[in-house]
Image (cartoon, rainbow, N blue to C red; front, side, top):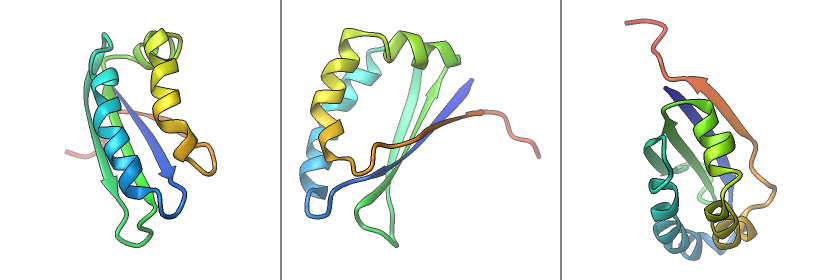
Length: 99
């Protein structure tokens, strides 16, 4: 499995609007083949910053299955206008190094 990590910096004052939009948009990502689960966490230190963690069966499920889909265009339209700057996405092997 692959863990996708994105730090989402939301425009100040738009946090509640973003959270509501994400509540709807998450239905899209949950419908993509290869999706396993996700978590969205809000920073305690920076209230406009969120951490999105998405588990995928394999990297291609996100990079090709989601990012190249029509659903991704809807996702972008629903959420990307909240971000400043555009989030950087990183991928990690979802395997613990230490037991």
